Amino acid sequence: MKTALLKVESGSPRQAAANFFQALLDRQVVDALIVPREVPSRRMAVPALAVSGDGLSGANPFAPVAIINAARAVSRLTSRDPGVKVGAVLRPCEIRALVEMAKFQQITLEQVLIIGTDCLGTFEPADYYQLTGAGFDTDAWLAQAAGSGKAALNGTKIRTACAICEAISPSGAHLSLHWVGCDVHRELYIACDDERVNLDALFDGGILVPGELPAARQSLVESLQKERRELAQEMCRDFASRVADVNRLLDELAPCLGCHNCREVCPICVCRECVFDSNLFEHEPSRYLHWAAARGALELPTDTLLYHLTRMHHMGVSCVGCGQCESGCPSKIPLTLLFRTIGQKLQDLFSYVPGASMDEPPPLTTYKEHELEPR
Image 1: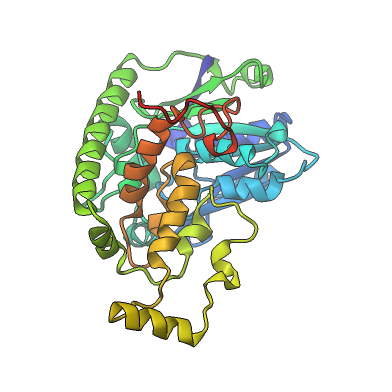
Image 2: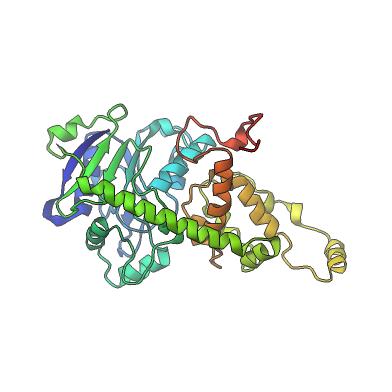
């Protein structure tokens, strides 16, 4: 990877990033760009498709909020060949989701230029909306977060999925925008895969200059990764003790409304027709009465546990830990810890890291004779 320095003029890293994105469009490195962009009120940032510099007004790749896993937005544009080169500005978990979705034939990666960004975490959308209403300034937040590694602000915590995520720096990107451990009021850094993208025009135009990442960055990233890894282990141990048997698991799932929002927002949940939308679970009244008589009482709806166990079976091994399922849950069931606790065991069982490589097929699509033998 070739590393370059992106100078920040007037102390605004947001503007520097927007200028860089415009240069990618102007020099036809990409023909279109999916990038987080603020809505007119500036209260929220959402994935937007830009095809010119005008569309980059309000672009904010540093906004610490994710209303969806942006890999889903990329899928809508590239499920078939769009005929143009599409750049996608993505966080590490979104890159991993993109790769997993490509394995399930939801994305055509040949026409996608992956632009990864450092990420220290995101706030719940409702929390971010409140912060912006109170005058949240992205550039100021970015400066303190880049130096300290702490994303929480004024008592507002980042999402659980982010607090236990070790993927601070993007992996698998063709271009990477680095800011953690940097003096963001002066400079950002771009890492480039020379084999996939040519940025000579940006060097010739003075937009990029040769430069190496700050020496202190690596130690900060490693310290944060260790801290988050230990927190994840602690939280998962506690959660595992809370769901040590099926009755206690049912207690955790008791607030489930049956809305299936977790399925709707999950980037890995890609079935065109879900069994839980079929009539398989629609029974004659006599069946419900029979079950109630046999048990003394029958909880309704009857399929809550089966629904969540089915999702764990389908998604667990490919879960990228983006936490959108929990963010989308109106009852705030701890789905992040459920999938992290179970998913990690499944992934370790198959020695599989979801989203790490296109060359490694999902375990559920392959069969190896000895894969489940004790180790």
